[in-house]
Length: 144
Image (cartoon, rainbow, N blue to C red; front, side):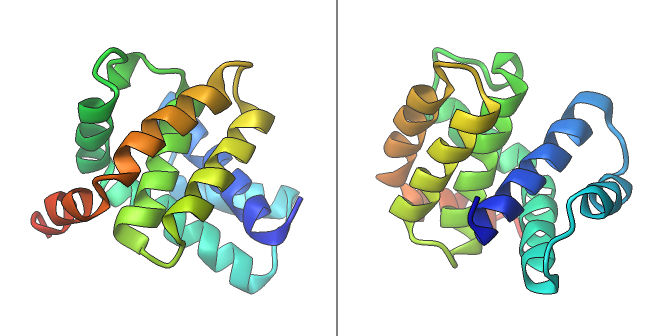
């Protein structure tokens, strides 16, 4: 697995645990980094992803709900929900990853951690969101 993908996978694992058990994200991140060390640069990238998603989770969920109305965010599979949050944060808020790269990476991570239908679901929702990147960014940044 490539470096940034490893960081995304680690971030997903942390967000999954925080989402499912409400453990403190900093503690979970430390534990994951002990089990699967990353370079300082990649660890920092994973940390930005995790805390960026957590800071903007409600806004990210609102945008996801808008573009996947048949799937209430609270009822989505934990993996799918957090993969969507990560990718949306990356391309709409973090803005250091091109949209198509973030979507491709999300699909690849969904293949590893999600169900058989996760990659297709993630690709469809993010494809819809990609057409509204600026709107998503404004809706989140407008609250800061």
